[in-house]
Length: 345
Image (cartoon, rainbow, N blue to C red; front, side):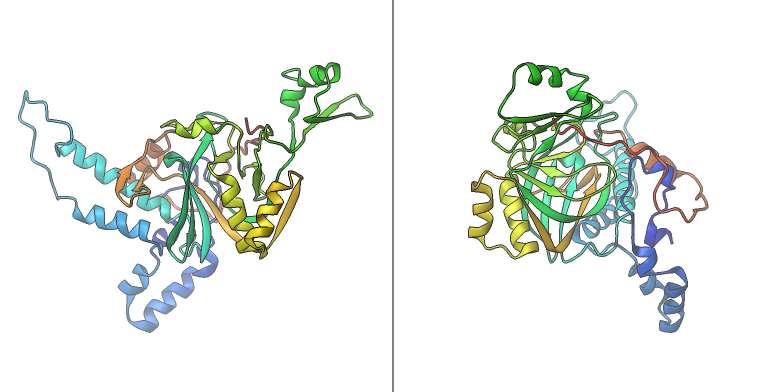
């Protein structure tokens, strides 16, 4: 069960809400019966490992580490990059933490899927284990606006989206009063019977969601979208949002998803964008989208590299791996607070 689902208790998987479906795909009793019937217990257990190149690369890197590092002589400061007992321990722990995280996702991620790695500030479109496209992203700021980890499905692509402005901005920042006094053609302002001012930002180049939004319904209101603030993609550390994932070249990604999932031709997808009108393209074939948190893995060049632990989520996992195993419950997701990200700014 640890090989299939991961060893870490749910409360140590901070803001990890991705539901792993491997329990249904490989129930414990079925796995045990298969092992006994095949007389291949080791092979049956190995078959529970995640089926992707990222997990395999991490496993190979762990196996390649030396058993021990030479001790550092007293009074000597080792040069940067020098392997020491302390650095070897940190490297081994970092790899183990991220190997563990892969077990929290479905073993089979799907034939075509999107996967965003928050600490890397990248999202990839993967088809048949090959990366088709990779885009830079802007993710949530540390704290309450940190981006949670999810496993959802792309239900639609919205070209030229509208944005319903949250009341925290309408009232809290005085936008309602400002637009009532000085109307702006970029916004539709209405007042309900109880006096509540409602504001919808209309499609256009200044829309906070940009020119494209990938609709992946979830309780956290997290989605991938374009942005008019494209200069932020040039920053090295791109944790600026209120939780949603701003995506570089989002219109291109949306067009590809509309072609793959709704059968649009390139010309039809382009026309949806250029029309400058709201258009929701519903997927006739949905695709998984995973929002993950890996602090060590292969970068866009294929090289294994560490990514900054921007939310400080490695320590709880490492601590749980260092302790005796805790009995697991039947719960599928943790009981942590669901924080709604209603502001993409």
